[in-house]
Length: 366
Image (cartoon, rainbow, N blue to C red; front, side):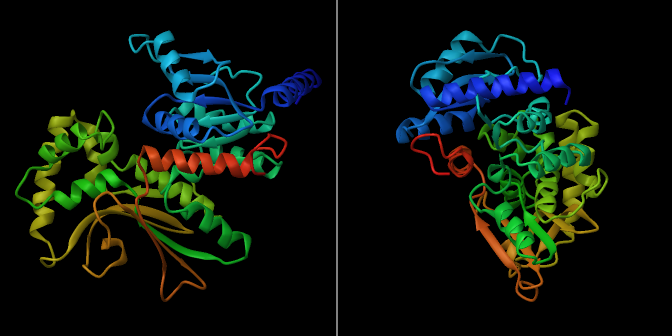
């Protein structure tokens, strides 16, 4: 860092210190979707002393906020930056008073800025999987910032209600080598493949899931396994493994949905699933998209799971993560339950805030 840049950083830190002493910890909330709404409702209900919303940001613009009320801030932002305004995936210019950044977006540009914000002394708490779940270079930059003392909370990125990331890091911290990670990591894919029985078309089920809000606006992004791959990279990196950019292999049947428009892509997948369903080993076997990783690499595949397989013991959109270590080898550690959803994700974000927020912020745990 140059002398001029270092001076600017010191000035920004001094501004934030003055803000904290007068208002409490300034927060920049990035994202205004369902997770941000759930977060706002929970924070309005709890009214934690020492947290002050300084800014609301999404891809249409930023709103500085000086008044109380988290949901009120989101409503004001919506009025200021209506949905008719074009979206732009760019790194936002954060308020100088925001010492804490809560990233409730799915923006790639925002995720790419996490390491920079940590280096500037900000605390970053995120539900955005594109930071530690994408390229090895981006993950290395983040891990370097953490090694220099950066405070980063990512519990909400994978299985927000399960605590798998924290458990894996605890194993690493106490010298317990992790041998294997396996999981059903997507609630939307679990819902889809639980319902596919060879009688209803898969494309019809995808339409139903989209209308229920279980998929991205373009469901191919879910079905292609891209989100599952990000989650598997995050878990593998939490286990201390190096994950190269080409280390995760995705079932080609899933990947091919990206090669055509949705209707055509799902019609083609329909035919492949009909063939797969004809190979069902027994009436109790359960079809699932299963993610598996070892230190040397990982894969995401459609699998038939036996009825007594731990990964098959799920209900609805539940996630399941199975971890094998030196201690949990013959009998793996299994974490199972609701892993996502706006309320759970928001709660995981708040837990990270309370864990990482500076102790000088009144009313917050260190």
